[in-house]
Image (cartoon, rainbow, N blue to C red; front, side, top):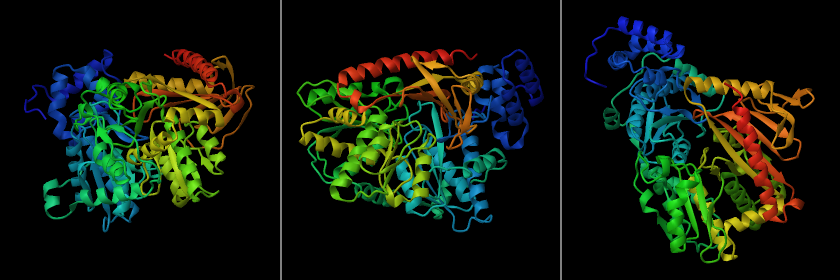
Length: 611
């Protein structure tokens, strides 16, 4: 907080705010939230800084950080950091999140914190350690015992710690793959999974109604044992649990690993070493833990972006590596690249999250079948916007695929608890999140790195690459090609446009996309299916802000949803050719590439019809 004293009073500031609103410089939401932060005692610590911003007429900044109250999405409460503001990540919004969690968990236990505990971890982002200590102090002040991972650690390790220490809840401080400006808290339930309905909405209610935030100094709580450091214990137990999911086989693979300046090395390297991979090198330009994410294109450490692989691939191709793997800052997502063939000098290419998921699904199920541990009641879990190839692979091995789930790995974790984790074989979502085993309830890049390394070594012994294996799967199960389209809609105007766009897809959807007629519209809010002739029928599915348009060529469809963590609308486009039409793969790939391109043109054009 600044030490400079403002020269205007609160009354004067409120008058200037009203004038700015009339002039179109502040939205109505910003005015409402500014009034609260300037007049209510719970925000008194931020008053002078806000007054100084009003004094300097920083209307755009004030609108940005006050136009709404930062929400909980699929990954928790996430956004840009700023010292104050209802729509920013700061001590107040983080504090409200921890206090709201503590209040709700206590209420679930008859108002007592006796015997309650919380695990807390953090990544390499700016202020992550500060926010983690703040959350720990709040949970302790509310009567919780806190188990604290006292170094940069992965999100799946936090999920594991909640289960291992039998905690009532957990908090992970991370903004995953967002830009350096962002941070967040992910809130976990006693299962080790991110909070699901109805608990998520109930916690949000407590967060939004939080007045006083109880907090004690982290150092004091650490000194008297109310905060317990358990990093070494969790590290060992986590590595033991992940490596227990390993499959035997060849280990001759030369691997280049990049943590993209995040926590990945601490989680991934011990796992790979334990299961026998000796030739693993860390890509040095990305090795330093840093919230600025230097040396990464755009400073965005997202393994979904092909550009982050450019430099590692350059080294890998020169030095004869078999595989490049990248994990995001909190090490819950995996991206990878490999040569197209085993021939010297072969070009390299990345794989999509759906392709990695299909490859690992087939590897896990085929390995379990080979060792005789696969049963007909085993199952995999995906989501409504994950490749349909996963279900076809599961069916091939006599397993079922639980795919009627909203976006977010917490829903995959929920299925594990509902259906029984003992029969869970594998789960993944298209955004590069994967899980095997029952030790955690969130996606785990350490386990995914282990499985991918094993698969690459196995294929290498057979004279194949993962790209060639993907081609084999396509000829067996049909060629699947998917594409994600992001349309950014930032700020208050963007939120309004997102709402209009979703309404239009429900009320007046396009009649044709990419030369294919729209056969029906699935609305997961209204829980209805509307056919092209206007007739409706009930939809059996989860409740969520998701619309799926099925096209008249089977297996071709697209889904649209507003992001739960970023200011954008996501379009998931799916195309498919059956096995009989997929044997000539070059021709089939060209056909689906053209189809995807035509669909993208129409999807983007329709998005521009709202204003």
